[in-house]
Length: 351
Ligand SMILES: Nc1ncnc2c1ncn2[C@@H]1O[C@H](COP(=O)(O)OP(=O)(O)OP(=O)(O)O)[C@@H](O)[C@H]1O
Ligand SMILES: [Mg+2]
Image 1 (tube, helix red, strand yellow):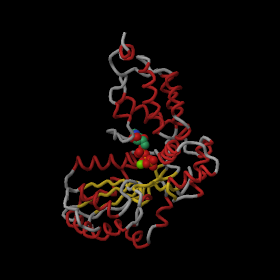
Image 2 (cartoon, rainbow, N blue to C red):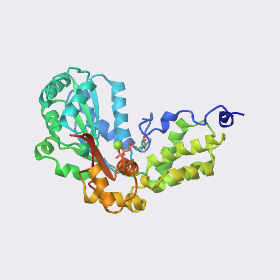
Image 3 (cartoon, rainbow, N blue to C red):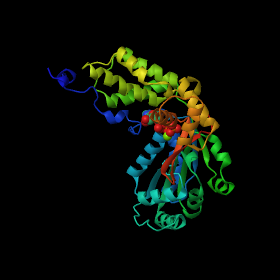
Image 4 (tube, rainbow, N blue to C red):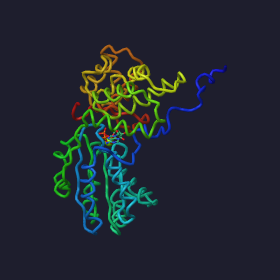
């Protein structure tokens, strides 16, 4: 038998639709967020009657379905009408008014953005969007460097709904008064799921993702229990995926408790969004970042070494990336004299 024969002996994967396990996947229904989605829809509703919509400020902890619920409503809207344009911007990726303007232009099909400044781009945007109406979702809004784009859109687009999403309710308090008084959003909090809701969400995702009967009940319940403890759907999705890999490695037809237990070991302390639960080394790095927020990654590494840190630069970078993925800190790329560098910042609050 060749190396692969053993592994592939059963031919078929246990997974039917791997996409469904990706964090970005948008299921056809989003259980336990019906009310929140109705709230979003009713803010948009006036646009159907050619009036202006209401604005929303959505806040809540990580992994509680804010992004997926908002995207789902946008998708439904797109299926229902061409009259209302939908725009989704991730402000972590597009963190300046200029970048956001370029992104919006791209989304509404305007390609001649070269040599235009931010104000000119917003002129174009309003000209196009004022022919109909628009719904804007600005996700991770706390990551923006400036809020001029909000001012432009609030002033220049007549019929719209603006939806801002963040983990930090306090972001609104610090918003420029000029913008806030024009925005006057309705606040919507996405509360954390309880254990039962977590279980049912993971169940419905797994029904799309896996072949029937591949999970033993004990194994599945173990995933659900862990995700419930962590209050984090993402960790549940991660465990579902990883457990399968362990089972498939052994060419099993069923995923069992031992596979989930192996997956636990990959779910390292980083996904637990409580700094007390970080490994000592990571806590050490995290404490340096908290003390020196806003510094370049290279400078932080120097401080780390001075304080007795022993990891290589590569490991250090990897740990920073993990801390950032799990939202303990944020990182952004910055152009410098010697090329691109990464700036590392602590977040506003700890989980
Ligand atoms: N009610 C739900 N039904 C189905 N999947 C869900 C539900 N809630 C969350 N998820 C899934 O859990 C993951 C995290 O959800 P989402 O990305 O919407 O979280 P979030 O609230 O935007 O978190 P963050 O603040 O970290 O951005 C996604 O993969 C999403 O598809
Ligand atoms: Mg999100």
